[in-house]
Image 1 (cartoon, rainbow, N blue to C red):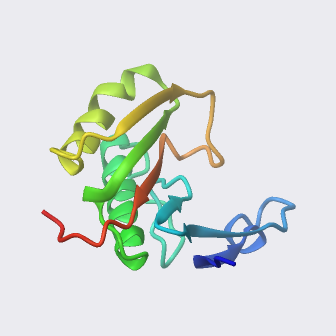
Image 2 (cartoon, rainbow, N blue to C red):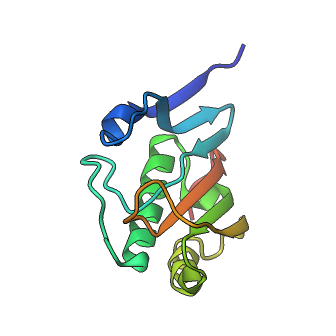
Length: 141
């Protein structure tokens, strides 16, 4: 029976103390050779502080840096990303966010979905990026 590895578990009551939540989650789950990441935003994973408030490019950069860090912790890398879903709260953010994501994923060629939503979990968050990757066992480029 395969087991799943859960990376950086947390409870939502610690992450969102202002909300009445009590959900056990984690930042990543490794199931077989697939890595499923929680949607990443402009937040420092160590301090839980929001970064880049008001700056969608800075938030996208932090989200991608978080994704790279979590994938490394899972034994994968951005080179192994197979799918990204990008959530933005304003269609005008598409170009600056996709430029940032494009720099991180140059030559990777994942499938991608972009969605405009009315809001994210906190009002200061402007973009959220969700990624799925594999553990290829190969050498990152």
